[in-house]
Image (spheres, chains in turn red, orange):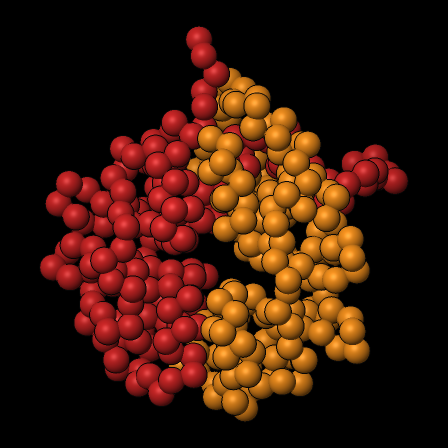
Length: 154
Length: 166
C-alpha cells in the first residue's frame, strides 16, 4: 500500500461546518461583530444562497479602515466579488495551487449548486499540512536545540 | 495532537480538543511524503525569501501604519523604537481593534500591537517557520537576516515553498 500523500486528500477532510456566511445585504457593523465574536479573519458572502464573494481582514485594511464606512453599509459593496471556489471533492494540492497561483488566502468550498459548504483559509491549510508531518513540525520545541531542564511534571 | 479548528496542541490519543471541544482528526495511518519531510528539515528560513520588513514607530497613529501597509502591500508591520523591534501590528489587529469602532487617526500603534514578537533565524529549518505558523497561528513572522536587518516571512511564502514541493 502506497503512503498516504496529504496533497491528495479531499478538502472534505478539512472542511468545517462552523464557518461564517452572510447575505450581501448584511450591514458592515454586524459583519465586524460576527468576525470578532468568532475570532475569524474572513467570511463567505452569499446572495440567494449562492456564494458571491468573500469579505476578509485584507478588505477591511484596504477599503474600510481609513474610509468613513457607515455601519449600515451592505457587505456586498465592500466584499471581494467572484472568489475562486472549489468543491469538497477537490484535493489539498488543488487548493494549494489555487491559493498560490491566485494569491488568495480564502477559498469558499461549494456544492454543485454554488451553495457554501465551507471556507478553506491559509491557516487551516497550513495546520492540516503540519499535522501530516508531526515529526517534522508539530513535535518541535519552540526553539532549535531547546532541551528541557526538568522531566515532565517535575 | 493538533486541532485543525483552533490550533490547540492536545495530548496524543485525545478524541476531542481540550480548547474548543471539536473532534480531533484520526492520526494518519501511513507516513506521508518523505521527500517533502526531508525538504522541510533541510530547507532554511532564508529559502522562504524573506522580504524587507516595513516598520513604524509605536507612537505613530494607526492610520499612518495602515497607509504604509497599503502602499507596501503587506499584512503586517513591525513596530520599531530606537532601532529595536518592540512589536508587530497585523491587519487582524486593525479588524479587531480599530475598524468601525475607533478613529485610526486617534489611536496609536502601541495601543493595538502585539509586543515582543517571536523571531525566526535565517538559518533555522523551514520546519520551525511551519511550526510557529501552525501551532502559534501566526501568519507573519520577523526574521533575523545575516546582514543584521530584519525581514518578514508570511504564510504565503510557506505556501509557495509547499506548492513547489507537492
